[in-house]
Image 1 (tube, one colour):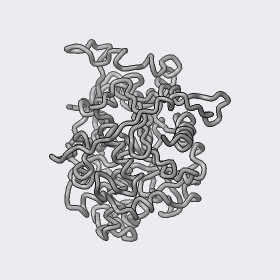
Image 2 (cartoon, rainbow, N blue to C red; image 1 turned 45 degrees about the vertical axis):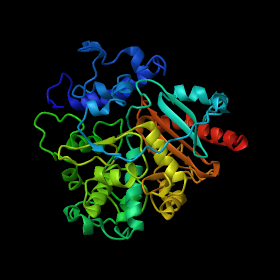
Image 3 (cartoon, rainbow, N blue to C red; image 1 turned 120 degrees about the vertical axis):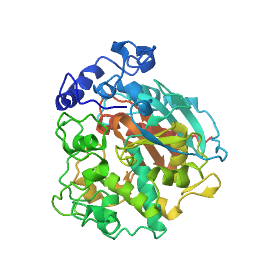
Image 4 (cartoon, rainbow, N blue to C red; image 1 turned 180 degrees about the vertical axis):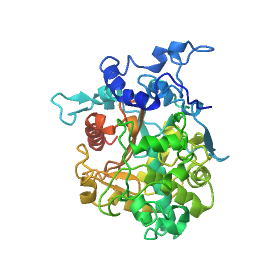
Length: 439
């Protein structure tokens, strides 16, 4: 899609209005009222102007239009295919547990219990699967998403890339103690030049970079403009692809002192995976995951203006294939009758990293957590760890409960702190029910 620099509202003003607009709309449009099928987005040949979703005017990221966008990402952005190959699909057995809808929990900070079924709607869920002991016990699709459809995974993408990097470390192809500049000399003069691979993997780099989704002046928006993910203003003279943007990132403080969630780390990691593998990231994901795991659908990943895959959040895949990936993690790296990644990689991810380093980031809904290899690690009684993406994308792996939960969503607000109160305790409640009722 061609990106125009002409618009009725300047880009930064439009971005600034997104958060306030979503906040106002969420008060009047709940999960049912905002259903994109009911609202008729992009229906007609052509659809009427008032029901058209477009990239260049920012309507694709405005609520409630984003409820359509997240299940139609490839229609908005250029992508490259992640092929599942010609092998057979690994079937996922079903054993429906309708009783899960009635499982109750207390939301974080709440005073009134909520049921699992209520939470699914409250979180603007597009699709959700619960797996227990290798079987799908709960599967629902809402909004614009269908079982055969693909959905933007947002930052869940990071966990796929982090797992690839950790696997390359286990295979001796990537040294976590080596400086990034050893593998990527292009970044020698950037903030990443004297950072280790491990610091990038765990996001403990010291960067002069902000990632605040409600601030249009945040560096995160500068990055996505460079990558071509948002329209560029007239007269733009900055970097025009993601790799060139990474070269401009400056250092702030010292590396290795604290966790700081900054997506440019994932972009560096994706570049490292490609450089060490000698192949584009999409091809590596196809060879390492989609082919051997028996995935159901080809996936795709958004590319920047230089054709490079966006490792921080560009993956589009089916919900069942996300369930396959997360079930592989729960099963110690084994799936489809083969060892997909070393069991040691999964164990290391599940063990997490420094809680003290993580605490410095101030995540109020994630006390006692850590971040390791692009995964969020709870250190809770279930041994749970997560892949998380803005607007409610999630993969929750709970080994001690033999359970995984995967969700695609289109919540009106980006930050997961808005969904955690009605998500995290719900996951634990479902785990407790399944452990108490194993059959």
